Amino acid sequence: MVMLENQRILITGATGSVGGPVAKALAQTNSVVAIARFGDDAARADLEAHGIHCTKVDFEACDYSEVDGDFDYALNFAVAKTNNFERDLIANAESLGFLMQRCSAARAFLHCSSTAVYEPNGHHRFVESDPLGDNHRAFGFMPTYSISKIAAETVAGFAARAYGVPTTIARLSVPYGDDFGWPHFQLAMMRAGNPIPVHTDAPSEYNPIHIDDIIHQIPALLAAATSPATVVNWAGDDVVSIEQWCRIIADVCGLTAKFAPTTTTIASVACDTTRRAAITGPCTVNWRDGMRRLAAAAQHES
Ligand SMILES: NC(=O)c1ccc[n+]([C@@H]2O[C@H](COP(=O)([O-])OP(=O)(O)OC[C@H]3O[C@@H](n4cnc5c(N)ncnc54)[C@H](OP(=O)(O)O)[C@@H]3O)[C@@H](O)[C@H]2O)c1
Image 1 (cartoon, rainbow, N blue to C red):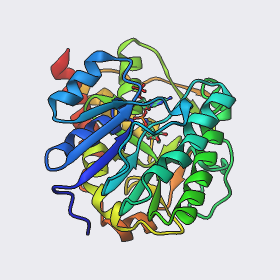
Image 2: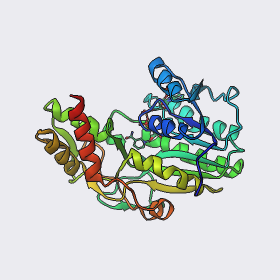
Image 3: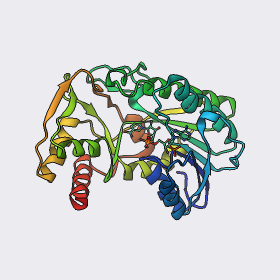
């Protein structure tokens, strides 16, 4: 097990919904440097208040000369979603190669990927060797996402071999916490009285994973890093449908979950978690408890 104490850690995507809580948790016991564009001054100030050193880098520039490459560990939680293929392939894929080259002395590199890389296949439980494809195409508003995440994995795999940096490529399913994630967005839709899009091939199944477990599993995922890279589904223990989790959230909040079946939304991406469980052990937050926590936190805010 990697001990994340008194380590020098580089993190990207720390102004994002997943990378933010991860960076703050790591900063409690480590020296953390965050790189991003930091267009939001308040987000940068918040990270700095947690003792995180922030350096401005735009991944599209593929220039890491301002970044000191001397890190023990590096974690990539950045993702560009401009919907422009040229820009997103550079920021998410090509640039990652330069970043890993810069951090090639690191003991391990964690690249956060997505289960968006799998070719849709109904209610199949995806294993890491399954065919890749574009499961976000039908979604409409994220046309570059699946393809640039697949490209990023390929670059991460190349860099793991070429620069000898032990790497884990972790395909995240549905991350969520008290104040972010797909379930949080769906709660806002329910509060507005809007129906939740679900796939006509019901139910719409995923493996939600709580931010507490994401943070908790990082040391084990870093310890599993290898060259060539280790690829793993970073998915919660249970296959759960949008219909199931929305009903639980609605119940806590006194709302009614209404659904709008459509083919123009993401189809199920249920995962086999055997490999992840062997690396990290079981999740600690049961999905029902996590969804109730999210709903209760939202009640508290309102
Ligand atoms: N959220 C989900 O439901 C979900 C599901 C599966 C997998 N994932 C994966 O989880 C990871 C984190 O996702 P997230 O939802 O937390 O992302 P997010 O909230 O959209 O944040 C994206 C991050 O990327 C940074 N970024 C974007 N373009 C950049 C650029 N050109 N140069 C430098 N930094 C850039 C942003 O920082 P600045 O804007 O400050 O530059 C921000 O910190 C990603 O790998 C994503 O693919 C997320």
